[in-house]
Length: 498
Image 1 (cartoon, one colour):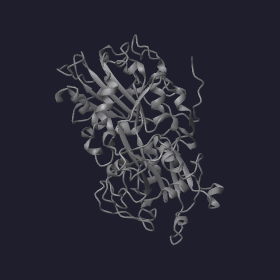
Image 2 (cartoon, rainbow, N blue to C red):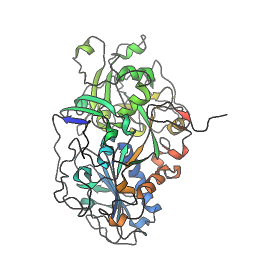
Image 3 (cartoon, one colour):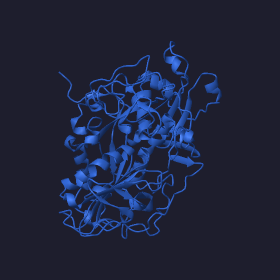
Image 4 (spheres, rainbow, N blue to C red):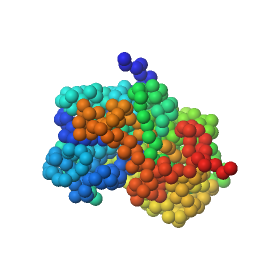
């Protein structure tokens, strides 16, 4: 019996799909499809080939590709070729994987944390990817309803490259989701937002109300927490008028993102007046939920819920900051930096802007130099972290007032030992038909008899398998010295001193 849905997303102006999606069943003999939080996409872009090779795939048979053919999500796929030719052009046959009959595929994409939970539970309350309606794209004999399918990398419309090369995903296809990735547990989604879809870059009106997501989880669901991902605050660093702080404290963040402060001068009366622009994520983002659970909740402040434009009376009267909501993490970074995707140069006012994202969203930084998103610098948080892209202990920020130097602790060290608090236990949700014992045998006979989901989580939990690009930022769960009972809980040490 269908549950009564308590979660709603309304897109007043819906972005149309660009290009056609495949309507062919999955050609992979075995597939593990992950959907949801952007952090997991970034991890598996680096880690998926190693996972396949840990299972026996020889390097010459390990292929990979990524791309964004629709312009609304990143998509990746890693393949170990077997007895079935996969890809365009065909990558042929080879020794491949040793303990299944044919081709093993791992797909991963970024969209939003709450969508990972919906999709793995075969729920589609928001009509996401409605083209996946069963008209030829579902695997014959597969019991998964179309509501559990999402647009993922199309193995037959991809130009693969042998690892370490990276091919190109040219098209998407409707594929069953087996792992729902979320930055936080399902019960932590209690937010709403309303404004332009892409903040100052437009995109059409977009409203999001996300709550009671845990009521949509499948019966007997399982989750793993293999990784811990730190987040950071980012500021506009336009040399003509940079945000005057390098360090974001919890009280500052609570005031800004609850619409409780209007000007950077409010934090230090000795500074000249400079407006604040709060760049936020729309409700449904795991980063947004983590901001509330780990910081604003403890400061007893609510998250802002509505866009507040420059001419709003609350701004003009000096009460609230200019506030924009953004669907994706890259959209939010464009809000901070002043650029818009697909456009050249600074296209909107971002002086005084500040936002939040995965700590490694920007990994290179030169003071006052325009980058991909515009002028963006990472900030310290409560005195920890680094403003430089590489976290190399050199302080090259533009801040004044409460400015502090970089610490000697990498983000990984800080979160591992509990000095950093703005982080999330990554959740990988799965349902019984995908892990008991293998990926639904009616969909993928080649995946039977093995709990592939547990194997994926075990691999990601091992610190030795952290990609080099993540080593100074992320932590594997097995190396954490602290823990949280949930996203809202205080940090406690796993082995406290007697």
